[in-house]
Image 1: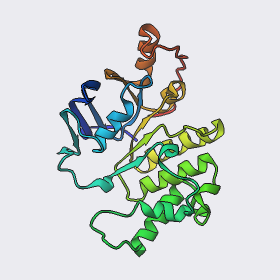
Image 2: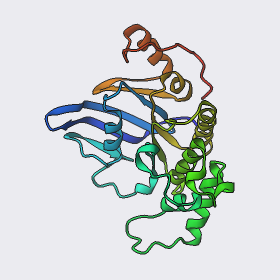
Image 3: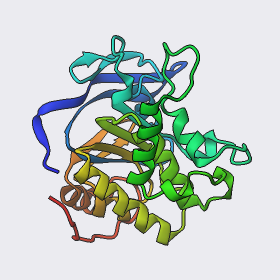
Image 4: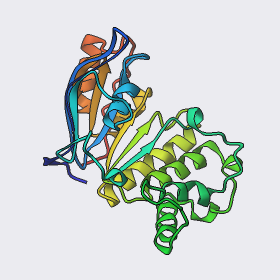
Amino acid sequence: MPIDHTKNIIVVENVSFAYDSEYVLKDITLEIHQGDYVGIVGPNGAGKTTLFKIMLGLLRPKSGTVKFLDQNINDFKDWQKIGYVPQKTATFDFNFPATVHEIVTMGRYRKGRRFFAATADDKQAVQNALAQVDMWGYKDRLIGDLSGGQQQRVFIARALVNDPEVVFLDEPTTGVDREAQDGFYSLLQRLHGELDLTIVLISHDIERITKEVMHIICVDRVLTCHTSPEEYLKESKSANILGQDVKIIAHHNHK
């Protein structure tokens, strides 16, 4: 999917955030365009997840603004255009006796629907989303009975169930084995291309993420860089951006 540089999905302008008086983010400015596939990287404690939550409207910045589709996030109402896959191990009890179908159906609940009963449209949307991630055949299985990779596909389906324009994923491969990771990234590449989807994800796996995404955003309280994977790897090698060794692999299979 080509990037449309004339259409901003997300604009972050001079955003800073502090817990008490300690700044976690300082003067972050960036744009993410329609059709982009972006990886956000940085050392532990660099503010990556905080930036995510600010972009999603879950945290309010100390200063600066965030816009979605040219609308200030404080006035934004069209939240079904945004899908979010949080760090699953931190947010979900896998002993909860819910089926795959029920988990994805939860994604159709929106404010304003006081008594939620799934409509025919809801059921069709759930079927479509599960089919997109190759999990429709598992619809009646309990979420806790699935492998880590299968669970992650279910949560992606829940993020897709409202046909969003952008999906955010926070450390999506944590706790997932290498084979499942390969399938997961192949799935993201397919969804990005077939659904005209903008994807933004946080990852600690720098070696892998530089093979997958179209742009890298590096955060270490400030915006260290926003560039192509190739340029990021060059900068990492010369400036040691993350304070760690980065294997240089010039292998990209996109666009």
